[in-house]
Image 1 (cartoon, rainbow, N blue to C red):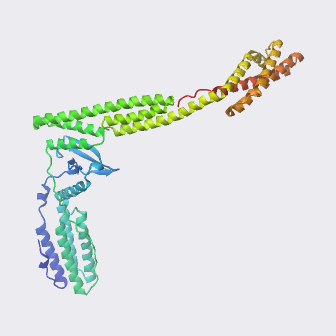
Image 2: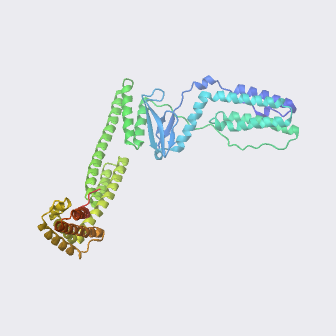
Image 3: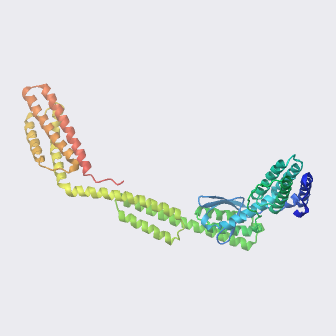
Length: 474
């Protein structure tokens, strides 16, 4: 590499020309053959677990919402037999080493692809800038050109994965010497200070690409780290696909062992799914029955049972258990509401049972006069000899209900009952009057009173039945 002390300060345009020529020479001897770099194999990204396992990632990984998502090649990245998308929780990842390794992979990939081309383009820009400085008409222009290329050089390593950072620092030194020479020759004292952290190429050593056997082993490790049963099943299934593809090229003992492990894992997941599925079905059915009858304690017992069974199964399905517990909590709230409604219904029966018997008996007495009331309403009678008995019975019923104290919730219904009896009595009175006077207008008034009284009594019957009806479960 060209030494900076090779450029002894000289004055004026000759100094800038000398620097420009020296830079062009330095770039020429420093550049490595591009074809040689691009012949290097592309290293794979790695996701390091906390135990140090370096999982393969085909391309960049993505972090979001406390998880990392990446595509894992099984069978090697160059010609994978399967490419499995995996999502793992952040907690199982060694992010310090994973990020450090990712920087090293990006550096190597960049160097093997376009790094040298970009570096040569930068070198040409610097050479042109030094040439422009040499032939600029005044010192101010020279300084402006030099400061611009110097800022570009200082930022370049960070933007290009630290590629050829040492060579770029040498360029910065040459540009700074040129700037110092120009300022000294023109008597300038001010200078542009840019403090930029020194960027070095990543020093993390890259791992060799895994064999098929190693790739399958890494996939198995990823399956153990996955917290989703769906992903564990997908990984083990993908392993079996790769094993079937590579059977002819892999050692038979290893192949049998790998297949046995994958099938055992799939069988385990299927057994766990069946256990948790049966637990969920059994628990939900029991909770539905308990909530309908307001059995709060039965549901609380089911919640404890779910936790015990989950412990016994090894806590293999946290999402399913969470969903089941949420369903039980919802059923518990329904059970509490049903229990309250049942207790309120029982309270009404206990406290207002006597009123219920009184009002139901009163409604039965009214119902016995239904044919007579209907005859008055339809102007079809009844026999005038029955009207006196009906009126006396309704009068006795009204008197018997006057001292009765109804429940506060049905006071209006009780008043409606009294109004119905009075309307029916009025219908009977008017019908008797119409018969005595042979007056059709009075008969029509009696019909209207009979219809109104009967309608009110029906309304009372509905309200009383609703008030004392056993509540339906939610």
